[in-house]
Image (tube, rainbow, N blue to C red):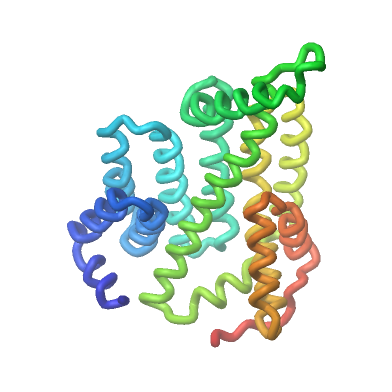
Length: 284
C-alpha cells in the first residue's frame, strides 16, 4: 500500500490525477480533502493549492450545491497544512482550519447566501413547521429557531470532517516518511494557557451573543473544537495502557458524533492550563 502511495506522490501530475480520481469516486470525497493536506504538507504551498483547485473543479463545472462549503474546506485545509508544515503545533493549525470554515459558515448565514442558508435553514424550517410544536406560541420566528437548532449541528459536522482530514493527512505523512511519529505528536498535543483561556473566553462571549445573532454560532463552535482535539489526546494518553481502552474510546467518539463534545473541550482547556499529561511518550 505504501509503495502505491509513494508512486502517486512521485510526480506532480500523478498527485493531481490522484486528487481528481478521489474527487470523482463516490464516497471518497473526504480522502480527497486529506490528499490536499498531505500534498501541501509534503510539497508546499504551490502544489497544494493546485491540488485544491483540482478537487474543486468537478463541483464547479457541475454547479453543484454546496460549492461554497467545498471551497471553504479546501482553503481551510490548505492554510492549516501550511501552518502545520512550519513545525507549528497541531492545535494551532486546527485553530486556523476551524476559523476559516467557521467564518465561512457565519458569513453565509449573515448574508443569507450560500449552502448553509439556502439548503439547511429551509429544511429545518419545514421540519419545525410540520411538527406544529410552536403553533400555540406568539411571535415565534421559525427561521430563527431553524438557525439555532440547525447551525450548531451542521457547523460541527463540517468542521469535524475537515479536522479529521487534516489529522488523517498528518498520520498518512508519518506512516510514509516518519513511522511512529504521529503517535508521539498526537499524544503530546498541548497549547499555551493564554491561548486556551482566550479561546474559551471568546467562545463564551460569541455563544452569548448568538442568542440575538444566531449567525455567529459557527464561530463559537469553531473556537471550541481545537481544545476538543487536545481533550481527545488526553483521553488517548490516559487509556493507551488500559486493557479496556477500545470500548472506552468507542464511547468517546460516539459522544462526539452525538454532539457531546463539550466535556472534551473542557478537558483540553484543563490540559493547557494545568498540564494533566506529565509522563513522557515513547513510540510503540
